Image (cartoon, rainbow, N blue to C red; front, side, top):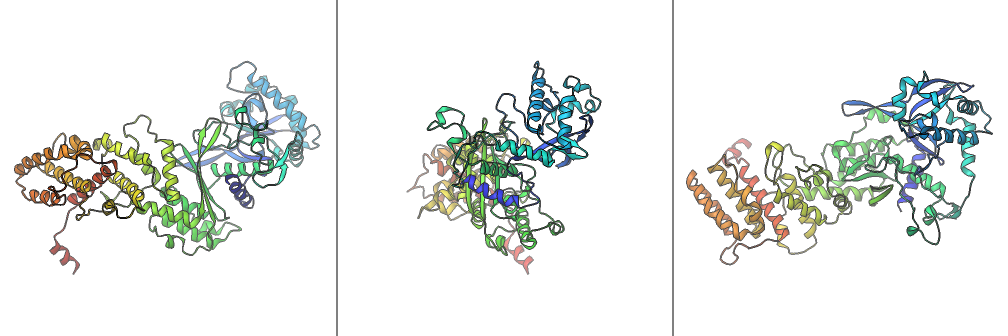
Length: 616
């Protein structure tokens, strides 16, 4: 299903003049320099081909993306690409000091191109052959045209040839020589798993590049390199037969999604690289999705720029840009309002890829109509809604916010569990309960962390309380008559008699009393007793209640006795004594009770009379 969806998307991209998607037999790759050569094969000039890209406040140079003959897979040995290679192959220059390293690669490049271009009757092809015959790789580093760029050439990737101001690999005769070479060789014909057609089967699938943490040479989505994984004596790609045409199509589409040429940028969750696309020519669907997942990364295209784009439904694009704009500014998370005015509802895909040595693992793959995808993400944000501590805190917590809360703030390598991060995003896309690993990690962080304002560490804050609430809501959503539902609300529920929630509220009140009595205490009762009170309340609360009486008498604020009495009355101590232990879910409820009550205690409340007089 993944390959079929990517192949269909390739067909859409091939009709888009802005995508520059590579046709079958070719690939899109970065090129750093062009070698301008004369008809006699002399090196006339070295031309940098870098594009300037804005990275935050800095401008960086990136190799120019070009459509070149398909790059071969280099697992080992010496294998040359056609008309586009690194300096070791094209010039015999390398920073690798092994004897003969660069020389052997230049000789292979020379042999391969002499073979393919032997019958190519064009001036550009003959100029390339003449260059390879006349160029002395041993003197390459001192060549007057190469020397000024030597360090960059060695480290900056691919080189191509230029003849008479044009790129040699774009010459019609040279392209014909390449396509003829591609068509020659041992061909195995079989039924393609993607289309069902009988066609030549790809033995090796092109590499995927742009996946964080993967090999620099790229990784394969379909790959077999060991007899243990093969069946019926079929080797390599024949175990999973995909036609050469479809292999080229799906890898071209996926490499485009992973590249910087894609205006709807990939993003990361843990070790997973996430790409997404709609089965539509309109790119605004992907932009709106990106805004829902990562509101800060969406840049809405200005109307003036949209007007200048050819061959698109401009009105539909404008409506989709408005959707993305609403999402980015978090102005509306109502599904009907977000999708109002859109005249189609395409299939939408989300694919999560993770590195696995020289291969690529599929962490998750989700497919739904676009409105269902939006509905599920909006549901995720609704479940997370809780009263904020401060107005400047984000109204909607993204997956990245959630994952970050599971990591120790003092960790030397702050990385979340890869499997957990993928499971959280999958739960969002499928509207299913969040993984227990996420909840357990949050509870463990609450137990282990201590408040440290200097290092921006908070034991119990807005994000952690919201995550606990959302986890419990999803876990108990379809369980009728469950008392826990009454406390899974945005703000304080003073009527709830759930023991864990009431005890959490009581702890917040006792902490407030201590802070009034000893404002500069080195360690509060939260620092010393919270973890024990949360897990084994019966062993801790008698101590805390006795301690509170000393604090109350010190400040003379005896109205606190009334607060304590009111909260304890919800427990009905005679019939339901303080529990000796709380389950893991009840510990989360305890945290919610504490958070709600603390927020309520520290929120300044206007007297009813002054409020009513202001509204008149």
